[in-house]
Length: 80
Image (cartoon, rainbow, N blue to C red; front, top):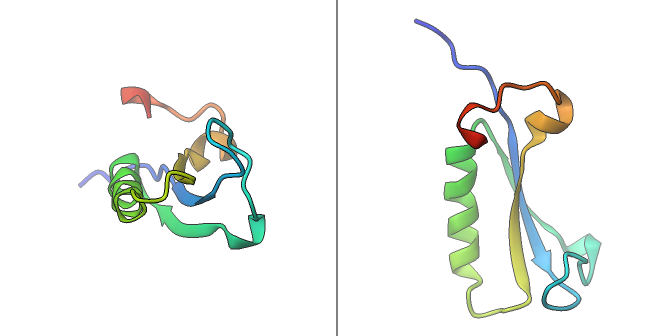
């Protein structure tokens, strides 16, 4: 059995200062959803949080490809 390479992804979000910006209103209030072992898991978590806050136009959640920050030469087959 071949073990899959870890490709950690961070999901987090918070309230923005203004629409169209990625500057947060209060960094101390960021919602750190978690770190996930692959892109698909991270997107599922992101989608759940985004749907829970759909009524607040200022709230945004993001998926950060931690594996790209940790190892810029990471194989990104599949675009993730």
